[in-house]
Image (cartoon, rainbow, N blue to C red; front, top):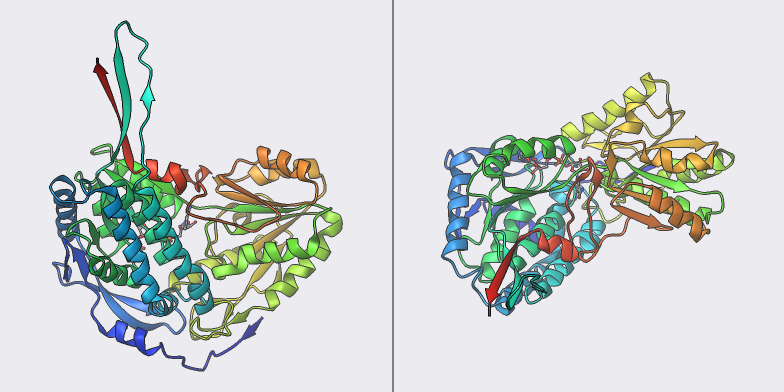
Length: 499
Ligand code: NAP
């Protein structure tokens, strides 16, 4: 891999520069404010470790104020009662306003998260706009059913889908804007009011989204955006009895802690958690496509993708050829600051993540695995880690079992292809898997055996707001996207009338 621009300072475009000079504040009840305590958190640019901005560090009182505002907007405000077509127009307008500021959103995302600006411009921002438009369409399509009543007499029975109420949305740092709109879209389309708590490392686009939401004409209290530490603001939101549901995306460890937090009022929980997804390349696969697909799957976004194909399984006779191809693929990456358009791999998001990924690589070496390519930090300016491939692993090693969430692939040579289903399932996770073969029958049989929420065949991960997404096993509870996703923001009510 090559390093570029490591010593070149690439400043944000004028628009984004201006955006950074405006203060970042909490959005509560339609107005902007600092945290009640006045506490702030530094936002670090992961490409150079410099302070980029400051955001409020909300505490329990701020969360309480936001929950009360959302409750008032739900019980008395216009949102759940608004004609669904009006809600649809407002969601569409938010999408239009993001589109009008798309450069700013893309550059802000890159500065904050580190990802290449080409990715922010061509993936994160357009996908966020499309996602909001998709959910806009759902406002007018939420429907119940009529049911037969098997009792003597004449009845009409129907089900209604009603908004679940006040919802806490807690998001991670890997796709900050996308994660925010993927939860806001269905929650708002269903008629809920929300409190969004973005990840402390990457809250900037969520706060600018708040400006756009107000500009679009959102009534006060419907969308509240509260930044701060997960252990303080996130925990206070998850525990608050005024919240009817938490929709959480993040690590399995924190996801489990929310089960306890939800106990007080039995609030509903949707959990989109971690993964350790297998990529399986069968001997008859189109190897060129499979190698590019496997490489993209683990190295895109510096490997910080929940569905990253982080475990590779290849027949022993093809192992050297496939891994050799992946080494070449890894070495093509240009590591550098995300704002440089030539960068194809940015830094990891934070010091903590940088240390964590390097620690996993060191641990693998200590356990006897071999580093085939990469394996080190890169430069001393930011949180860069070389794209890394690790071989000579066994199924018990930490690098094979645990989610690393960085550009690290562990490669296993397989002697008995009948064992592939078992190997793929040898994980506490079950988020996704990909299978590469020209034999569609083998592909489907293997797909049925693998316990994972999404399986791709001859493709890296593909997602869309209409494709159900979520995990088996410890990758989560529930599904996001499509009809399943929106229904998770509703309660089902049955009405029976004697005629
Ligand atoms: P994380 O540490 O679990 O944090 C996720 C969110 O939870 C952040 O907003 C965090 O706030 C907040 N949080 C932390 N402690 C909390 C607590 N005690 N109560 C309530 N909220 C709390 O995860 P991450 O490191 O940001 O993200 C990486 C993880 O997310 C990986 O495991 C990845 O697989 C997973 N992920 C899953 C999906 C999916 O759809 N399945 C998608 C993307 C990522 P702070 O950041 O402010 O502490």
